[in-house]
Length: 195
Image: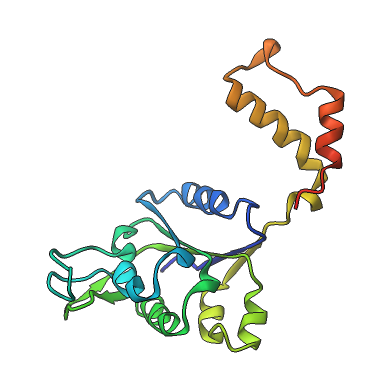
């Protein structure tokens, strides 16, 4: 039985990767956590980066390389900004998710993969499906468990808690001699719009 895919949605900066990493840690299976920003990988290299390639598969492929799927085998593959994935790659990603197998670019052997898939998007994937910019079948495949992270402006009760946590973390202090937020600093944090 394979772990169901998880889709984390929320604006940029809300902590989607942090939640994905915590999900990986709590799943308890171990293995690597491999994070990929889909928007940062050039379209021409995406298939090679995702699935790996064999030596000589294309100009410049001087050695074989494992792709992100193989690197995450036994752990978690986190595909951030999945909404930026080109339609042609969405088809190939869907097949790899369904089959739980990949083939290197320039290769022939089918390689079994066993990893958890966590995806994140800062754009509404349902709207992209309706606009024809995201495959509906891929959306349903990755949207098995959905976690929406609201922006900080929608969860005011977390602002001071986070502020105190960061002060403790970055000051290296704890106990009674720790740094504290002044009442004015607390007011500024609570009044900030958190875009």
